[in-house]
Length: 263
Image (cartoon, rainbow, N blue to C red; front, side, top):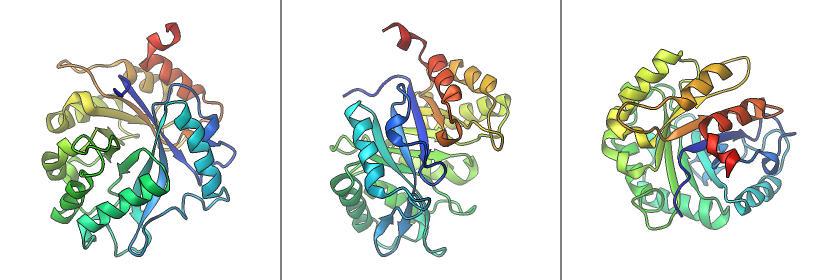
């Protein structure tokens, strides 16, 4: 199945607003990222933080099934570790880790892929992290034969440059998380990163709300902007839980996909 063009990605924070259940997220979202799944040295991954505000994992997965039946992909966004000494740079056996992630995410949880969020407190990805991505690419992303997606989120070029140079082919798309960047910086960073990953698989990231937010005016401008050398991959919305009435989300989707209302 060909991916929608352009993509609209939304991060759903299970711990942020339990009144916003997954099955009620609006039409027009192509991918929902469950934020966040933790690295765990004993269990590989765990979802205790995601469920820390009271909603059960079972209820979350029930909502996931509703969205999947509508054709929406739902992914595990994997970020910080449970133990502070564990990170993407310290995974001892990348091949065993990758096999275990696939078993959990796909075979046990029934999700459609993984989103990689470095979240290492300023540490740059090292060769171990790169080997983890390469191992994961056997099960997820365009190099795999599973049909499962793998994405990457970034906002620090200096930290992620080497990983993206070596692993670009492993990712279906890359999202920029510079929610506080102004319009000029957003575009400059997009053009910088597009030299690594290509504009067609690169997405602008924005966030609604009062803090660490992107104004709706700027978000709409970004959704309509295209690079000189082709098309962008789409838009990513972080923390849809803040957008209680989906006004921000709906207007952004309409700006990104203006023909959707006419089909």
